Length: 631
Image (tube, rainbow, N blue to C red; front, side, top):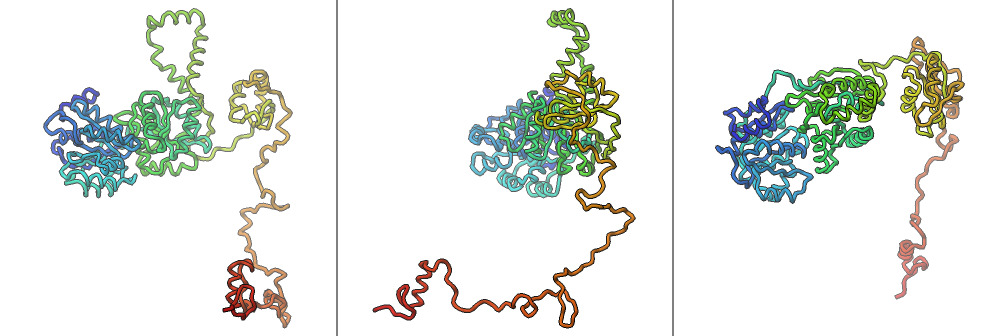
């Protein structure tokens, strides 16, 4: 290894190399073409950065003055290309390397000026690099090494023609490295066509793939998907988290929802400009944002510090995408959690994806509001700040607070201030862990009804009213039965055992200026639950009776002719033949189209019809038939 590169690794705290990095640094592979496959998150970027060093540096430890590029790095996405450039910048900083990038979405004039000034290493996306080659703004005659990073992804995205063009324009005497998570037949064919005696490097680890990632599959009701995402984010409180969606519309919807709930969130999708995408990732890196909602544009190559949580808001379309999404966490020895949000309709698909990816997940329910509150309490009590000594600068305010307030007041104020910084968790519908249908709710029992002085016209809904009533009336969700919302009033059912205490606590204590009073019962238009379940057809015939299992199959209907179609023949027999001709009392037989000249088309006095009539009469328009024009 070059001394300048070894010093850069040591300065960054790299005391050991990953298996893929050690494999490509084998002495016998210096300058050799390689087809490398390794698990995602295994340090492939540094691996090919170290592998091409002997080829582009030669016997020296530092570069000469930058001119035409010596190495090309091609990546499938803009984000991955810029990330590779950042990694190689510090790796080759001691060697005096000048790096340039050419990616879609950036100003091409700036890129041309950077290439004209000279660069040792150029990192590009396929389409933009081909554009520069065709415009003659990049000189490839000095290229000694070409690296295709995430080659399988570039082929999946339709860059085969661009890659073949780029490799065809590079000098034949070069080192070509293909790095890929998988090696399908298309990659093997590309390697055979554009590499010379390539060495296949496959790093096998003793541990299974994604061993540092804990997979969780959470059952949620169909309407609680977004609420479950909020609770998962609150439960883990990860420094960085990515929420993956399948469409841009879902990204925009979920970004707005999380932003409204107080999460520092950014969006990342293909419809954003390159500067917007770069700013979003930078906000995650410097701590201005904690949650990134993204499409699969962020599933490959994106490496964010402290990314401990990946949430699949929508299940991916394939197992490869599941692996690449989840591979954003648990990188380089870090631990991570990958959470799949699974509504009832997607449970079969989730099991199928896990089976194809050869992964095992822990099934359970999404964290409830109580689970999140308990986790908050656990984190609060485990904070090391409780055990730190009071500093000299803190002493005056600490002494003042201790003198003015009781310990109970200080504790209550601390809890309230802490709660203001966190969004409240969501109440979720209960879903059995096995994915079975929930058991029917037991009878509510003796109860009383109360009337609230607001309804639908005041934007009141059961989901919003329930926590208000529980807080004001000092009751739990189990004490509240049915909630009926009407235009200007709402009705709530409270258990008889809790009704008196609820009324005394809630009167004059409901937020928003709402008032509460006892009601005689549910609203007059309330039909209530169907007794004994639904039976019979709605709107069916009187006396309708549903068929039992013992009634056997339904009898087939026998065809019967309609009465008006029955006719009597001459011998008195009744037939079902309808009269067809006049002789049978029906319509007369069609005699064909009438013969003779065709009637004029359009208005009789039109120029076309007047000219036709004049030609037939042999004279001027309007003349007698057979008349001759005067000579």
